Amino acid sequence: MALVVDTSDFYSGMKIKWQDAIWEILDYQHHKMGRGGAVIKTKLKNLDTGSIIENSFRSGEKFERIIFDEKGAQFIFQDGDHYVFMDLETYDQIYISNEVLGPVTNYLTDNLEVLLELHENKVVGVELPKNVVLKVIETSPAFKGDTVSGGGKPATLETGITITVPVFVNVGDSIVVDTRTGQYLERSKK
View 1 (cartoon, rainbow, N blue to C red):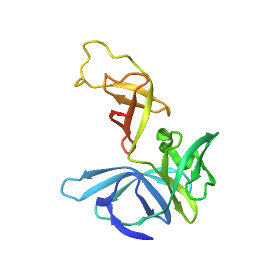
View 2: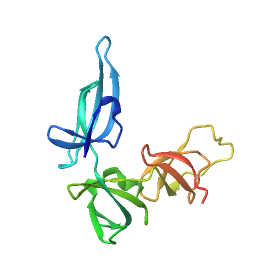
View 3: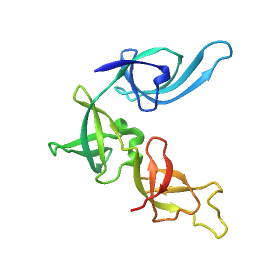
C-alpha cells in the first residue's frame, strides 16, 4: 500500500521509494534559494543495505510513500548484536539486528511495547512510543544557587544515551524523553 507525497510532507522516520529502493528520511532541512525555488537537503538510509547518503531534492518533487504492515511487539532482551522482541499475538521471539534498529536502541528498555514495521514479511524498522521513561545513571550533582532557567547539564541514561537535562535532575531520577527528538520533557511522575 502506498500513496504519493511531496517534499513538503517529509518528516524524520518517513519511508519513501526512490531509485528503486526504500529509504528512510533520517533528517531534512528546507533551504530557500534566492529567486529560485526551495531545496530540501536530506539524509537518507537505504533500508535494504543500511547505507546512509545525503541528497538534495527540489521543492515539490513527488515520491511514493511506503506504508508498512505493523505488528505489536515487546522488547525483552539484547543478545549480542541482536535485540529480541516478543510478538504480542503469537508470543514468538523475533531477533532484529542492531543495523536495522539504529538509533531506536537508545530508547529500548525491558518490556517496552513497540510496533514492528514489516515490508514483505521482513522487519525493516521499529516505531517507538512518542515518549519513554528512562533512569538517569550519571550526571553532575546540582549545586546550591543553580536555577531552573539556566541551561542544562549532560546526563547519561540507562540505555547509554547522553542528553541535556535541567540542573535539578539527579542520578536515580526517572525522566520522560521524547523519542523523536531525544530531548528531556519532564521528570517522571511514577
